Image 1: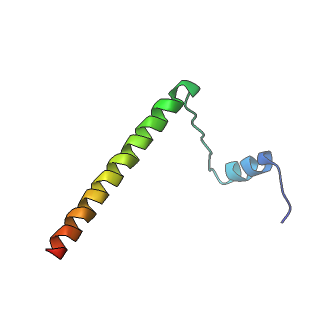
Image 2: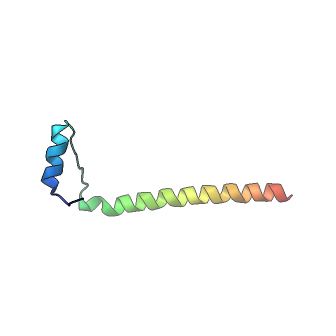
Image 3: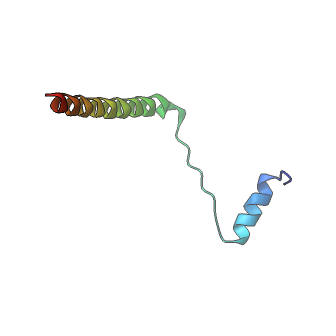
Length: 61
């Protein structure tokens, strides 16, 4: 397989009536997004850890 150019890919997609859309966020939003993602993962980790702790304690008593 030979590497091509992106313009060839765009032409191929356009020929099949397909389109590529890219959405970018401004650089000023980078850290807020990182903090939101970290908070979500931390909350999920805490919830799963609490569930596991509760489940293990309940089974051993």
